[in-house]
Length: 337
Image 1 (cartoon, rainbow, N blue to C red):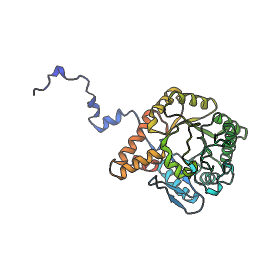
Image 2 (cartoon, rainbow, N blue to C red; image 1 turned 90 degrees about the vertical axis):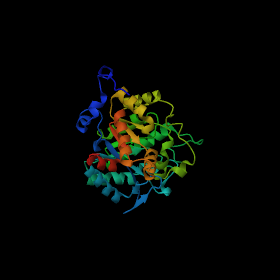
Image 3 (cartoon, one colour; image 1 turned 30 degrees about the vertical axis):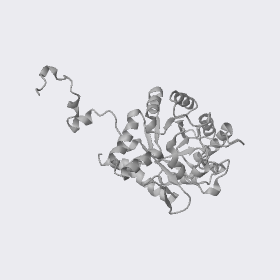
């Protein structure tokens, strides 16, 4: 077969800039570093305790003293912040989730300890009731089992204040109640917590990817086959996310989040391009479990695929990524992966 004549060759050869590592680096459009990673951590009461989470290989629940050891690793790795999630004892769970506003509860004690030992490390706590309720929902229910919006928001205001008094840097309402950002902002400001930031789970979808998380915080059995369709978003909707984000920003959110992650990259891109505000994404427990399971079975190369997934979030427009891979990824990045 004859070689093509010179005139038939493309004048623009895209592969030229891919020829050497130095030129690939020069033209690289998207960068990923430890600065972009936030580690979600599950915490439990007690001392010198860790508990394996079966559906999340490599992830454990930590008592507060063990949390401090983990925090030290994060600081060394350059991870800027932790997000805390409680797995409280079953006897503390109630229909109204009142343990969420206990100033001596697990989360406030963990926050205070972290800020005492690592004052420069960012600490994020959720404003939501699902880890605290006997029914596993994110709010207070009426007699029919419907989540009451305004009564729930009143509890979330108190929960945010409890965390702020403990020293939390960022409150993250993940409940998807209407109006909660504005009322939390109002409560924080009235009590002088003007620099406590709000990271709103603004576009949180009613996803099937949350299963391992619910095991981790002990709410799987409480929810007992129920669903959260009346307050979390329909996975079919994109424009609705824009309305949700716009409302939360108008109410005072400093940052917004899309959850889950990889199945919703289009939403991340849409939010970032529309609002140009600090935009975060949560690589949720189901995403983590899938990647881990595939890697453990030898079906995927873990390091390569995890970093590729995190880079995809950045490419879509995410400024920060909550990921259970944060520590491993930070280490790989330090190695020059």
